[in-house]
Image 1 (cartoon, rainbow, N blue to C red):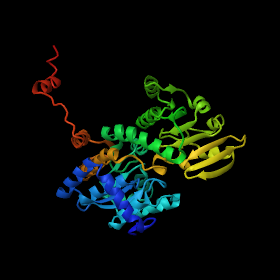
Image 2 (image 1 turned 30 degrees about the vertical axis):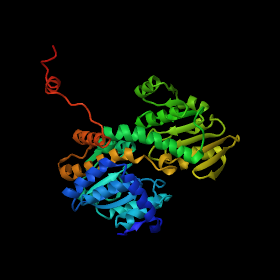
Image 3 (image 1 turned 30 degrees about the horizontal axis):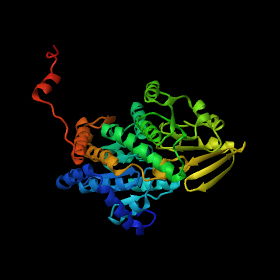
Image 4 (image 1 turned 180 degrees about the vertical axis):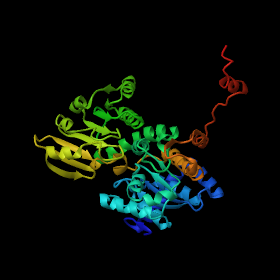
Amino acid sequence: MKDHIIKDINLADAGKQRIEWARRHMPVLQKIKEQFENEKPLEGINVVACLHVTVETANLIHALRAGGANIALAASNPLSTQDDVAAALASEGIKVFAIKGETEEQYYECLEEALKIKPHITLDDGADTIALVHSKHLELIKDIKGGCEETTTGVIRLRAMAAEGALKYPVIAVNDAETKMMFDNRYGTGQSTIHGIMNATNILFAGKTVVVAGYGWCGRGVASRARGLGANVVVVDVEPRKALEAVMDGYRVMPMREAAKVGDLFITVTGNVSAIRKEHFQVMKDQAIVCNSGHFNVEIDIPALKVLSKSVDQIKNDVQEFVLKDKRRIYLLAEGRLVNLASAFGHPPEVMDMSFANQALAVRYINEKGRSLENQVYRVPVEIDKLVAQLKLEAMGIEIETLTEEQDKYLHSWTLGT
């Protein structure tokens, strides 16, 4: 097994400085790290982590390592790696296999290398490790206690596997913890997506019509931040309850075939394929901008866009210009990959503090309980979710109300209603 596959070990010092900056803004994870250092709950456990290699992820890796885990880290997206962070971790003796701009072949080469650690626990952001183990490395499953999944797209894949009886070990859906989903997806994706678009384009949002495809927690966050910058927001969704919620939140709601005609900027956060397709490109304005903040680069039908185009040029960092046969121009950001990570830094550390606190505690839970669980996808235990929220409030210096004995009795009785 190789020690690492990274861009340049000489980037390590810069990465360490940025990791330290993030650490200061992740107080919940630091409390858990201190507890792990004392208790060593992961002593002798091999962990494969397929996550975005960022400063926040580095702090999660430090916490798991403090708990005794032996870790191999690979990137969960070819464009999301921060090369200085990968170098910093490699310089500390952590096995890291990640380079920004990997080809698909290199991506899977890195993941294959990480799996040589022979994991007891897998951590995923998109379920690629679990998919690879189940498709090519069934021999590893006998030693795997369970896994954790970080993002909506991965949870969708895993629930499909479980429904078909194909999932061979239990997985905790860290994404579904309220202190992850509501905050990471809404505030993290909302802010970082806008940051990525601004970095790539420097466009003015005020006065633009921004079309948000998908009104889950990520879509809510993106729509809210775009409106806060003065944009006129249109929401596209297939789920009637979410569409209704968007209407009641004050947004225009319409199908993509109509939104495509009026949008200046399109942002996909659906977790599904081809949210923007050939028929939509055919009616878009000249110089419309399209980008994606979902996990995989399948939400925009890029092959269809290429077929419609007479030329494709990289006109600036993270911006491709597709000149259509009728001379209209459509701009694609970050090759259709996660614009918040490819063109920016991803979620702020204050948000990832809660996500990775859930992740660390879920790893401990899997290590302790994994052998007794069925091969299903589980929500994060509510006591973990509440603990993360309580620790975050304490870190913010916020005290909340507590129930009196009378109130607690009332809530647990069926005879006190009259």
